[in-house]
Image 1: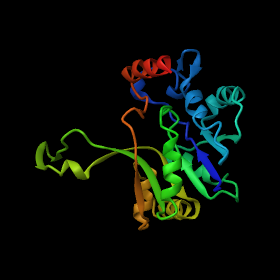
Image 2: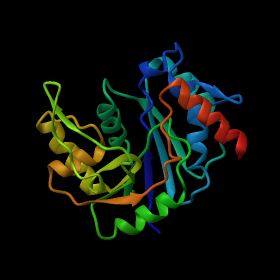
Image 3: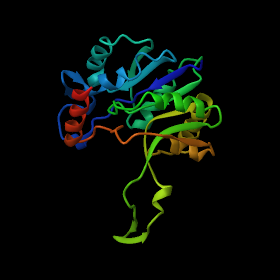
Image 4: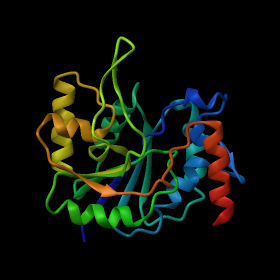
Length: 227
């Protein structure tokens, strides 16, 4: 059984939510969103540690939430960085030496299927990384100076989610390269692409939403109430 270390960057604020409360701490039915996210991991014995990079302002609140969770994994709360990628890098510096896989997940994405982890572990026997994704259902246009330049084939386009899972040495190498070359990616797999790593798609569900707007909160409450 491979050992998995989870990093959940939670130092961001989330301006699109338009609230004074950081979105990971917004409550749905008396629990913060990050609580529901952590509960997706708490009973998986492959997960040996969960590292949560946070801002100093919310460190105490995150600790209180974690103390309510009876998890197989050791939960570590550390200080995050200026950007998400900096927070993940801080988390990697705390990874246990016995970890085989590093799993990176959004703090406000609490509805992923646990099968994602099973499928990802299998793919990592062959590839450097494996990331949750769904086919794009909308037509996408490449636009420059307000003019359409190209319409990519929709069957080649995917919307990328988390979890994103990587063999430890591969993602550490990618992050080291990014730091040396001052590269910031829009997701973790982009950094793996920069070093020529092979990353596979884990078929995901459209239910695996990231809660970023007030309308997402309405959907999330409906999902939680239905479980």
